Every structure is written in C-alpha cells, then in structure tokens.
Amino acid sequence: MSYTIALAGKGGTGKTTMAGLLIRYMVEKGLKPVLAVDADANANLNEVLGVQAAQTIGDAREEMKKGGLPGMTKDIFMEMRIQESLVEAEGFDLIIMGRPEGQGCYCAANTLLTQFIEKLSQNYPYMVVDNEAGMEHISRLTTREIDVLLIVSDSSRRGLQAAIRIGELTRELGLKIEKRLVIINRAEQEDLSDLTSWEKLLQDQGLTLLGVIPKDEMIYEFDKEGKPTSTLPENSTARAAAFQLFGLLF
Image (tube, rainbow, N blue to C red; front, side):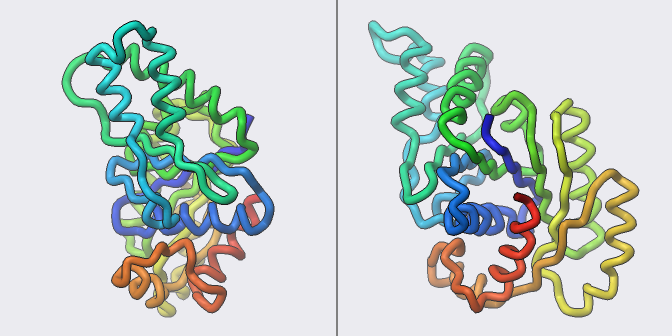
C-alpha cells in the first residue's frame, strides 16, 4: 500500500502550495514515483506543479451516470476514463477528482471510483492527496488508512480553530490516521512568540505542531507572474523551511 500523506486546510492558507512543494521534495529526494491526487473542488494543483490539467474523474463519473459508452460495461468504462485522466510527469503522476457530484444517485459510480483509485495507487509507493477542508473525497478515495494528515493553517486564532475542526472531522469520518500534524504557514516574525501557546492548544486537541513556515514574498511574485510555486528556488525562505519540515515525515 502507498505511503499516503493527505493535506487539508481552509482556503487561503497556502495548502496547495505546500502540497506542490512536498511533491517536489519527494521527487528530488528519490521518493518516487508519487501519485498526486487533487481532491480539492477548487482544483489547481496542476498549476502549482506546472503541468496541464486533463479531464477530471468528476467528468468520467457524470459520463457513467448517463450510461457511459455503448457496448462497454461500467467498470471497463471507468477504468478507461481513469487511465485517460492520469497526467504523467517527471517523478509523479497527477489525477484530478473534480467537483463534487450534483443531483441524483452516484453510488455505483463512486463505488467503482474507489475500487479503481485503490487499484491505481498500488502502482505507486507514495501518494499525496490535496484535499479541501471537508475531506469528503478522501473518505471515499482510499481504504481510510492515512499515514500522515498534514493540516495547513495560518497563524490566526480562527485559522487554528479551523485546523482543529478538520482534525475532529477526520475522527467523525472514521479515518484511520497514523499522525495528525499541523503546519503554521505564512507566519510573521512576531508570530513566533506564540509558538508555545500554539503547541499547547493543538496538543490538547490531539494534534501535533510539525513546525512553522515564514511568510515569503517570493511566493506572491510567482503567483503574480503565473509561475508554478513548486519551482521556488533554494533561496526561497518558505521552500527552505518546508523542505526541512518534510524531512521529518520520512
């Protein structure tokens, strides 16, 4: 089974940038191939990684609900569409889940989706899943066994409370998680004085503070210029701090 790291966090915390940097770290360190799964409804992991997006699994699910292709069974159709949705890159492959389902019953499609993603993940020693805060996708995506849940937060009290709620949600979903870790991202220098209180707050809720990543103007410059933030150079303070923390995960 793949060593699975799932990222979650409320919007605006830099979660997807962290997912992209984690995948880059793994590839550079020879921890590959990686199956990267974009399970955020606002899918943009491909932009962070600098690869073109393909059709989403949501598209395939819609097609199957409408009957798929004539003369083809549903399971063969879904397997074909999942293979077509896979974006191959150097050291990693990316699959995009797409938006949540609309009206009507998607039980059959979701069951087949779970089966084939599980089958696909067996070809990869590592899997990184970029989730939205709700974690609904991952409750169907895997066998509910996650090695590391990495919750990305900002340094605000509201952000930390959101991280705590995500941790609580994973317990409500019955997800089997080995480690629940939190990264405080985009921290200002003055925020470091609150480090002890953050650790205590999170620890009381069954979460562990992995570390802090400073605010880095270079990320904003990359975003403004449309550059993939996973390609931040070595002199990026956020990249350096993130890579140091990622080394603690393996």
